[in-house]
Image 1 (cartoon, rainbow, N blue to C red):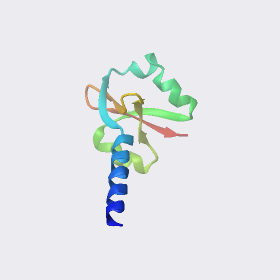
Image 2: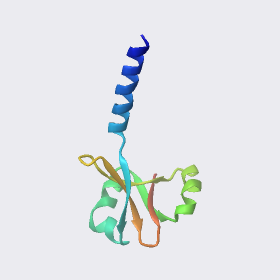
Image 3: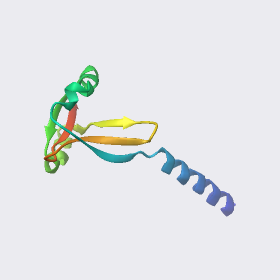
Length: 94
């Protein structure tokens, strides 16, 4: 019985590791969201977008803001949109 539990645990752990996305930062300039239509995609979903300093993100999460990601499903990577000075693109559903 314990062998089966160990086997199932091993399979579940491997599956969890496979389904997790790796996180990266994507350095952009301030006009990138508009030029790439990234902001249009989120505005269609009802989000308001803004830039935030990294040290304020946790307090903004309490107000309903969340970090927005560009997701690459093939490479299993999600990228935070970051300006050169460290500002992160966040969004909030209106």
